[in-house]
Length: 86
Image 1 (tube, rainbow, N blue to C red):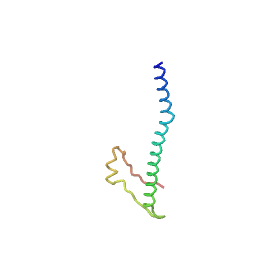
Image 2 (tube, rainbow, N blue to C red; image 1 turned 90 degrees about the vertical axis):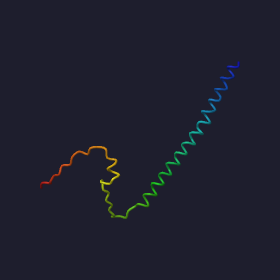
Image 3 (cartoon, helix red, strand yellow; image 1 turned 180 degrees about the vertical axis):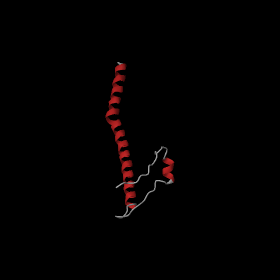
Image 4 (cartoon, rainbow, N blue to C red; image 1 turned 135 degrees about the horizontal axis):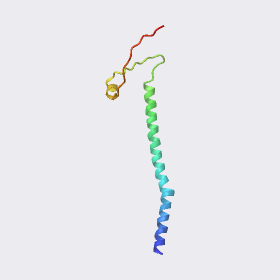
């Protein structure tokens, strides 16, 4: 009789945990992740607004910047200079 009571208690605790507690925990973490993503999106939108360029404005970015050279760990191959024949 005692074993049946223990099994019933474990089963009820199992059902309560997976039907009530686990969804609440999952909802909390999903809401937290969504809020984090929304904050990142808003920050990115704000950066785009502050760095937006006027129409026709040209910006030149050189690939020889020190930051790009540090990240370059691969062989780019060799460049062949050519002339166009008409």
